[in-house]
Image 1 (cartoon, helix red, strand yellow):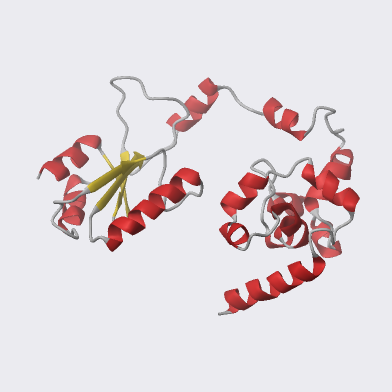
Image 2: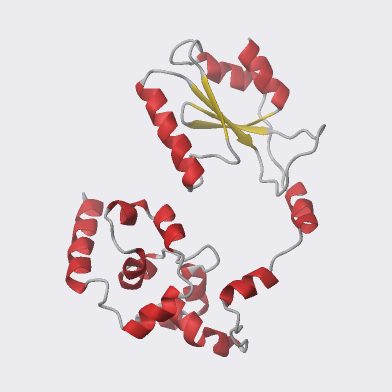
Length: 235
């Protein structure tokens, strides 16, 4: 109930203020670095309410810790400049207008995205970093026991694959798989979702093996060896 009331109050304030309640110069400045699609994908309540995403971010989003693009963290910036939050200063506006000057780095004439590109690491470096990630492998018996608790005896089993766990991460693919899982549940069908147990920045070569993350009927079960998954399904 508190969440519903909060959204109702927010909607009323938003309508009263309107998309032009902010100074035009600030809106124009923020628009340079604002990713509308990113904001709507990661804030479904804003999309469903049909708010203008930029106006919502300027009026409410930054105060709620909602990020304007994949590269800028509102919370991280406010942690670095705590006085901004106390003064009610939008961190993105501060960053674009004078944040660089305070840190001694002038803004690139090519825009902030150029700076992001300059900080990117090579594919080889990301592969080495990913290789250091350790994943705990579950036993095949645990997977077999979980599959035994099926909705329909696996007769109408539906299997999906993606690059990550749709129950944890947000995005277009994850949203589609989630809707598919909901529909399968309504039909009383079993749903097995498989994904790489840890992120990998390139396509796997032939012969490379890696643990698979398993989501069973909407519940993450952990990581399992590929042969364990095959054996559990064949049992």
